Length: 149
Image 1 (spheres, rainbow, N blue to C red):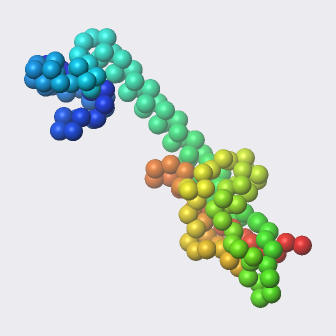
Image 2 (image 1 turned 90 degrees about the vertical axis):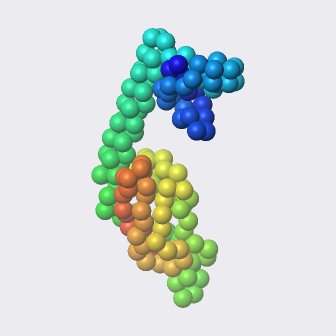
Image 3 (image 1 turned 135 degrees about the vertical axis):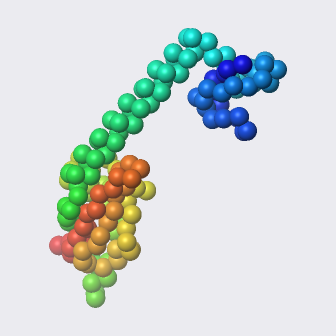
């Protein structure tokens, strides 16, 4: 019997997969537990539409990420911070602060966990920063930390 899995089933398949299982397994285990539904014409059509929708969503997100990466690539983000004697900052410049500055300057809302710093920013200077926008798509910017007046 062909069924469409509604949830991941260990040893059988992942959610949304069309699998061929024995009639007893489908009727006595999968269907009563709402793990699968029978693959009739309507269910197959729904599965096809859901897959197309998912593919379209991925294409849109990828295009948006590439556009944002092109917008950010090679840019210099200037930030100010207070420091004590010797040029060491009070605290450090965090990825949260960088995300806030990206929102202010470029209008991009980026999760702080997507910002990867080569090293902690604890002194004035220029630092390399990678922003992971999507799987396999990243932008590289420079963060320049200046002294606040």
